[in-house]
Image (cartoon, rainbow over all chains, first blue to last red; front, side, top):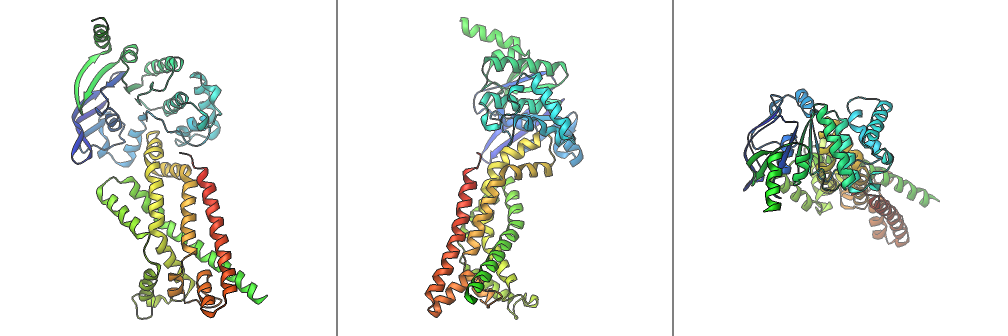
Length: 232
Length: 216
């Protein structure tokens, strides 16, 4: 479980982006929604332990990340993987990008390549395996970043606006892969504006506004609300 | 023939001194700029501002300060390195330090939020993430080195004041040109100037070539 206790964060001294967030994340899929500038990305980066809160605690499976020793920190970090809205791919081919998390965990190049190709095949994007990063469309780059996150083996997969650049076909593929990950017991945390996407994943939905949690509901409640908006 | 041999010797010495100074400066400037790029506090921003201002620090002033430091009555006089190539290397390395830190800070600052964060979130250790950052910014870091080298090889104040322009020992391009002009040997000075221009232009061409390959 990921737990945030009274988390505060600011980029500049005069404006707090997150204001005393208390949150427990243990559902299969958790969706974070909110208007632009509400603090969704910052919250995801706090959850991913990429940003250190100014105040408060971030507990990953019961351990306070920012008070852990360097060995524990590395093992906690490896439980979390964050995929940016505009994913950053490294120089080289798609397969070399997907191999990276395995190589830094001590896999041989041969084994890492084999596993990377298998995953790309399972995800239905093996046809781009040997393309360079600058030959990919935004949607393809997003899927590659997602593949690279999956192969890391992290328990918590944190995705920032994962469907923003995806067409319908790629979107369906992503939903399918996410459901697969849930079956494997991995926890997904997503920031998105898309209510239908949240509904399809049967997610717990958390709404954030001006740096504070404003409400929480199930995906069914979300879709009922959407129905009311459409048919009223 | 003797003149040509001397010009070749001066060229080789100038290249060795300036290359060594660039590598020496990079050995501390790159780690410093990397650490600065990780920090987001106001002190760091102020420090980077000061370093930017120091890029234009007068070379003769650095030469003077080092002369006072290395002269026999100075605090480091016991090292006995005044009027040696080592003194010029140290002086040039200090001269280009603000330039290398400022330029590489810009490179690392941009790359930090991209490559460092991505590597870390994928499970890399700090050293693995640093290696990835260097791999990704390699071309740009080389450009920074070459700009530093161009500045070092073209400076006069430090080489003259702490090198002493000793024939066959500390004489480099810029000090030779200054000497030949003083002697009225404009042909030799112009010829040396031309070689210096070719070296600096070639360096600039390489910079543009590598800069053109930069991947944003």
